[in-house]
Amino acid sequence: MAQFRYIVLDVDETVTFYRDCLGLELVEQYGPAIAILRNDDLDLWVAGPMASASQAMPDGTKPAPGGWNRCVLVVKNIAATVESLRQNDVVFRNEIVEGPGGKQILCEDPSGNVVELFEPA
Image (tube, helix red, strand yellow):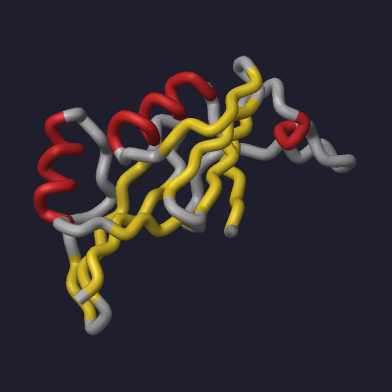
């Protein structure tokens, strides 16, 4: 099972996004500090400001959300998924693009972390 962590601004808001908008299952939540969500064999750990993963590094650098690294969620009908997410005011960084492997689009969770939606060819 693959696991990855996103630093987020608000764990409850992020859980709502991944659970209600993208269909991930909430596995565990430890108050406002961290939650674990699951999609098939992928676990997403979302760590809020109170989580140990959000503590400053020795040089003072503080982990923050955003950037371009991302998880990829495979969807069956990307056009319908995008339409549904747009109706829920989800932010997209681009439009659907098509390549030799399939179609993809980038959306953001409530903290600005990127999620790639991918429909295989």
